[in-house]
Length: 427
Ligand code: S3P
Image (cartoon, rainbow, N blue to C red):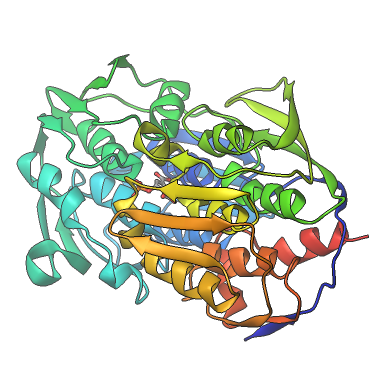
């Protein structure tokens, strides 16, 4: 389904609470399924990706009820899971596919996983390589590069692994496999990536140690049930932050947004660009969160690269759009990981923003944007990528003419009520 947007210089005002964090929602269901007993999750993201995680565990015999953001997981523990009779379908979700590989590798049964066309193009060998070193028996297309993948659960052994790329999905898959491995596994990260797995495993009673870039975890640990309160997803909030920054006169507040420091790279970047915003910390269980007030701002270009990249990797499409409105040059580098996301986000962002008249060029590991540029209307493609679809919708707030976006349904992967919330703030 395509959608035509004709916002005509809107001003955004109001308060919203964006949907729950996608990374934390996946993990809450997974860890609840691994623990013996009942786990309650509030603030769960009922988006397509996290619903696929629920489906997969139901197929393993775990009892899960989901009513909007409230999820109850009842499990007799991993040893009671049953061999799935059908293929596990992970849809568009890289997190489901890669973390489940780590979990399934150490079970006693056989399983097969596959996803949509985008998942079928995303590299799985980055997870298979360390898991195979642990003794995992996993087969996939092209030597294990791509889904469908077949996993024959095995007894695993601990490894010491230096990760070649900063990836929370790879790190998490190894950590989860390590729980079923004999011995102590050591993981060394090149640059810190999001640490939701480490935080939540400890909430579920698992012991692990962390020193600088090194994480150690011993096997044969049982998870204990816990209740999880999921904060708003800063990666979804990013689109509203970007909307307020570019739509003249805007002033909005985003309530209870997750502010885990491994995720707040976008805040550092917009601060350097001159954004006018404040954070008021919230009390609460679990991960840190805050209410963020953000206003339309005159921005300047900046350089985005190095260790901040994993802390804002999913926000780069939105930041590229914002940079088209900033005075001067913005350089995004060290972000080659964008090429293996839901789509090649370097080529896709550059192609689509050019259609709007932006001055933007792709590089091998990022992009260079000169601004400010007045944007025109155009017909844009989402590539079936939720974050590309939302970038296009935010752009429509400031284009001269209408923007038409194809396949907008994909936005439901992470932000099912995106248009409703965006349009609720238009004055
Ligand atoms: C995620 C990790 C990141 C991120 C993705 C979610 C996670 O991927 O882009 O949206 O939940 O662990 P990588 O691990 O591939 O960097």
